[in-house]
Image 1: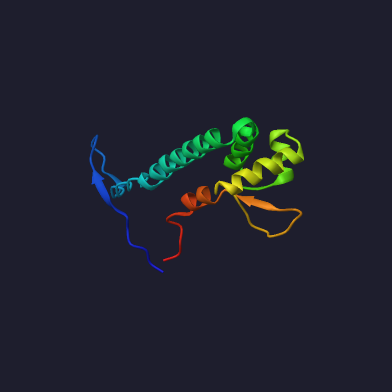
Image 2 (image 1 turned 135 degrees about the horizontal axis):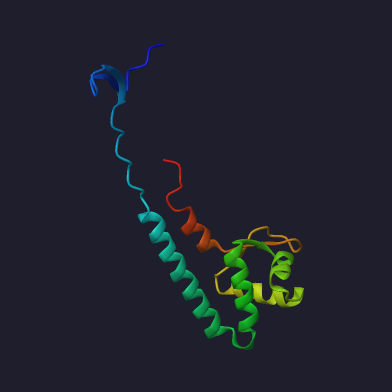
Length: 137
């Protein structure tokens, strides 16, 4: 197999003695990084988090602090079990369950397993923003 040369040999005479040196071709320009999609996704996530937080604060009443802590746990791990949320927030299991139920009622989270035990909850809008542009063509 023969490769094409990526440059040429040049002969120079810098100090009275001929020197043959290989001079590589110039490298192609580095393509610019397309960060527009990432920046747009980051903005949309920030807007989603702010609007969900405002909805929680407006409608949760005295449970708002617990619900906001569970919301923060979902932001850190968008797929979360009740026991995982309890470990992350240091809230009791009944408090987590009540807060998660409110998030489900508001459409912020959704339960994915359909079971009564070992349920998993998903921050669906968050994952859909992250998944945009990753679909197979």
